[in-house]
Length: 262
Image (cartoon, rainbow, N blue to C red; front, side, top):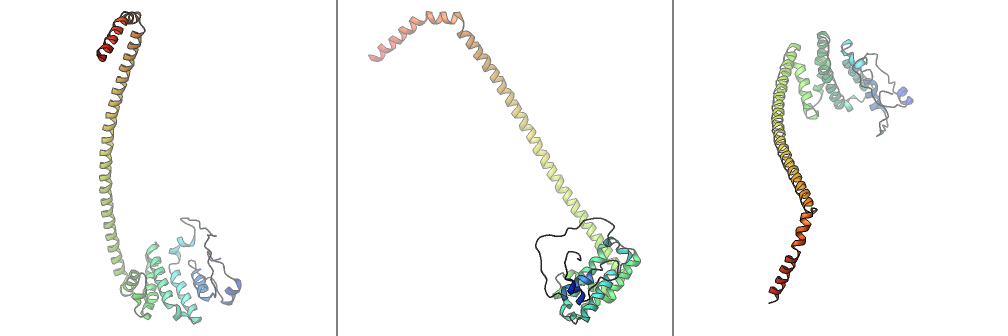
């Protein structure tokens, strides 16, 4: 299994596939050669293998110990493809993959200057020189930026290359600072807007509390009035007054009926 694939033992032996004797990317030769030698390739949609993410201890973190491993791997792969008589058939795919991978290796790994110099020299004099064999090469590459970068490496000295990379990094740093300042300004604007909203909300809450207190006072006053009214109706004087006014109320009611009937 290398690394998430299963191979028939018969196919591996028949095509004499093996891992290169290098510290890193020793599976590149095996994996890519098997792709062109296999008569049938099947894919499974469900994940059957999972990778553990870690910061150190694996071969990918020891790039500085053998910086030319990626160069050796692709040169070995090219020799194998040529011995199989299929190099011209897969040349475009080979070059496309090699340039993308080599540039990734050059820019994504932290190495000492001597190792970087050796890797740069190998890419400049050997790996990227194969581009000339393609007609209208720039129209083939999906990532034309990588194609142009490979061409610049071919004609630039290491000091010119590093000077250009420094300027690119400085420009990117300036852009990042500008983006940071812009984002900070937007965050400040949003913060001020939120503060205004919070202040307005506090004012509304204070008004609601005032209205609530006023309602409580009105309810307390109404409750006190109802209590007084109940006490009045329950008093003897109230009942005595109603008894005294019973006859006048009856007479008034009678007079109203007489008046309405005339």
